[in-house]
Each structure stands twice: as C-alpha cells, then as structure tokens.
Amino acid sequence: MTKQIAILGSTGSIGTNSLRVLEALGEDYQVYGMTAHNNVKLFAEQVRKFLPKVVGLTNPKKLDEFRGYLGDSDVEILCGADSLTEISGSADVDIVIGAIVGSAGLEAILKAAKAGKIIAIANKEPLVIAGELLMATAKENGAVILPVDSEHSAIFQSLHAGDSDEVNKIILTASGGPFRGASAETIAGATIAEALAHPTWNMGRKISIDSATMMNKALEIIEAKWLFDIEVDKIDVLVHPESIVHSMVEFVDGSVIAQLSGPDMCLPIQYALTYPKRVRGITRHLKLEEIGLLTFEKADMEIFKALKLGFEVGRVGGSAAAVFNAANEMAVEEFLAGNIKFVTIVDLIEHCLSKHNINKNLTLEELLAADAWARREVTECLKKSR
Ligand code: NAD
Ligand code: MG
Image (tube, rainbow, N blue to C red; front, side, top):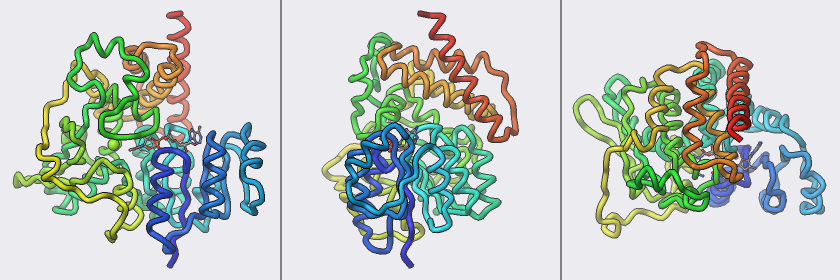
C-alpha cells in the first residue's frame, strides 16, 4: 500500500532532506501535501517535481509570488497558518513529517496526534512546549510519534535492546557546537557568522544558533523526557565532537547500546518513514577506519549555562518549558537580526524563567499563554535596556 505523506516545512533543511529520502524510497511513498513559509521559488520547484494534491503556504504575503513561480499546476493551494492543521489532520494522510522550526508547528503536530497519524517529528519545540499533552493525545488517539532528531532516533533504536524497566540511563551526545572549548570571553563576543558555523552538521539557522549556545541539547533533554517517558535525572549529556555516536542507552547490567552513523539526517528521517523496517538508502555507510578516533568529554555547564537550565526546566516541568522555549526563540531572532549579543540569548532566557510563576497540568491555551508571556517579557526587557 502506498503511504501518503505530508511534509510540514518542506523547504527547510529537514524538509529538503525528507524529499531526497522520499524520492529514493520510490513509489511506495507519495507526497500528498506539503507546506512552506517563505522560500516560494524552491517550494514551487518542489511542487512541480513531487506533484502533491494540496499545498499550504503559511505566509499569505507570498501568494502572488508563489503562483508566479508555480505557473500551470492543478495543485490545491491553501493559504495561511490554518493550512498546517488542515493538511496534518487530513484523512488522506498516513505519515506527517514535522519539519517546521519552532512553536509554529505545535498546533499542526497536535492535530496529527488527534487524527491518529504516524508522526515523524524533527520539530522538537512542540515536544518541549507541550510534551505531556502531545504524548497523551497521541496515546488516546492511536497516533505514533517517531523521532527524527538524530539523538532521539539513536535512543529509540538503542532502546530496542532491552525493556523499559531495564534502562539505567540515557546518554545524549552533543557535538559541542562551534564554541566547544572556547573561553567565556571568546563566546561573549561571538559574531553571527561564528555562531552559525557548526563544525559537523549543516542545518537551519535557528537550530545552528541553538547548537552554539547548547540550548539545542537543553531542548533535547526535555524532548527525550517526553518521547521516552524518562526522568530527567536519568539523562546524561556527553560531548562527542565527531558526531558519529548519535546517543546511547545504558542498561542496568552495565551494557551500553549506541547507534552510529555519519552526520546525515537522511538516515533518521528514513528510519522514521520505514519503521519498523530498514531499507537501503542514500546515506553513505560509515568507514570507521577512516574516522579512527571517537572521543568523548564532559559538557561544561558553567560556560554553557543553557544546559544547566535545561536540566532544571526538565525537572520542574509545567509551563517552565514553554517559557524556556519561547524566550529562546525570541532571543535567537533578535541575535540573528543583529540586535543583541550572543551571551544575551541565555541571559534573556534566565531572566524570563526567574520571573515566571510555573503552572502545572496545562491546556494548550494555557501553554500558548505562557509562550506569549515569555515573548512579551523578552520584548519589554530589550526595550528597557535600549
Ligand atoms: P529550517 O529553518 O531549515 O526550515 C524550517 C521550515 O519551517 C521551512 O520549511 C519554513 O518554511 C518553515 N517555517 C518557518 N517558519 C514558519 C512559520 N512561522 N509557519 C510555518 N512554517 C514555517 O529548519 P530546520 O533546520 O530544517 O529545522 C526544522 C526542525 O527540525 C527544527 O525544530 C529543528 O530543531 C529540528 N531539527 C533539525 C535538524 C537539522 O539537521 N536541520 C536536526 C534535528 C532536528
Ligand atoms: Mg539533535
């Protein structure tokens, strides 16, 4: 049976890699729908190549330009943010690939969970903001959430080696980002270009900055907590600059099971799409003799304060994670716009967390309100400091 796929955010780094994987997987997978926000030239090329039934253009200002690039096509065009939920909940869709960056993907992922879809999730922010609600919604409606984030795909694969009550801890690996080993002074004065220059992965701008602050790993701690229903105190972070061991699971008998492959997102994307089967794909196989050395070191939580905050927020739960995420999204935008210094990103997040009254067991509306509060708080804070 042909599987019908919806890609939310087809023009991004994960989106374009997903299309490469789907193309290689061949006729068993068909792109039913896809969405994009800004890059309408690429979006139109993708539509002409993959011939989806429906597309969602989330930025309405780009509609005329998109139609211009698209030319003659009978694809159904939906416009605006609602197109995301319409496509992710469509009865014709089997698998939803969540490849949007940030909280913008939250409602569409929740909708897919309500509709009982298979969700291949790269878009980690919805899991951070609303992990409890999302996992419960998925369970209630028979949806299956499969990780695409490379660390979580590795953990998911490693967990197959034992039962959940035999897990001692999860070891999340981190490349360390562009500022691994750098002094606090160097990091304080980091430019946008330096912060974007990831040593091993080629990714979108937001996650690249998150890797430089190590907020990415902090978000991944919370992502792992919800995906694998594990306490934060059973999660360790280990810096592994080669990005070959994508994460590990330590079982109670002391066995550590790891997943290894090159730094190529096509493999975790493919595994989520073909799960539980494995097939030959486009990812280059590892030649460990060429790599030679795999190294590991402790993460520096004094220099990378975000990591420490990630553990704290993960422990506390409730609305803290929504605030943590939203403050980061805002601060990263401000940094990328050249308005704040690199160190200010984490300072702003810390400020919002210290001012926030944490609530537990929240509805979607309440979580969105916490997200909106943090965004306002960042704006206010920056206004005062100017
Ligand atoms: P990206 O910036 O390259 O692409 C983002 C996509 O989201 C684009 O298609 C864009 O059109 C869409 N988008 C942006 N703003 C939107 C909005 N307001 N409404 C609707 N759509 C919007 O990002 P990426 O690097 O592909 O990352 C996507 C997600 O996957 C992120 O959550 C990231 O943390 C996660 N992830 C990425 C990688 C990677 O290698 N890039 C690895 C692991 C996890
Ligand atoms: Mg990751």
